[in-house]
Length: 190
Image (cartoon, rainbow, N blue to C red; front, side):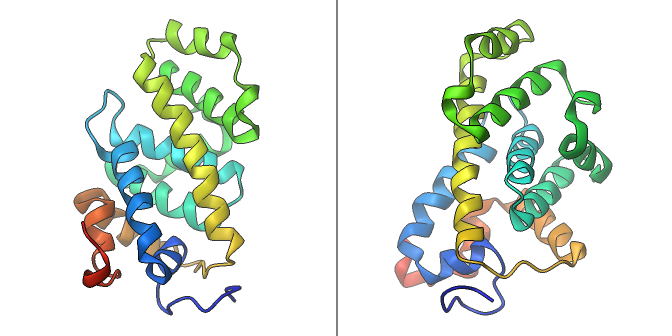
């Protein structure tokens, strides 16, 4: 049961965002840029970073929904998502993404854990400065999103089919577009 009276029927971050739409707008705008805007990392790769960090933070809602979005971007490959969460070093992903996931894990523990060797390793595997920047920001942002979801004890259903369908919708339409369905239009300027 949520710690505060959140709108019913909106699990996870959706309920928290509907409760306070003024804060939802910048949060949605940020995730839209980080996970969907043009980038040399694919949306699926960026969703895998968000999923991995959320799994390290043990945030069920975020790791499940972003895993579903990642799978939707990756031709439905749910097994790859599970493998990345469990042991990304042996997953069928690029060495560059593996190096970026190392950085993301370091950020999850604390930003000062990222070393110059981690950055050099990512660069040696082809990571650009923008990709390194965005990995750090995705990891930091998802630590915040995860704590937002869990800190309010939001509703987090265990029916994976719900996440799978929502994941397909977000992959198709984006974060800002799907949030319009649950945020009051008069309070949302996007």
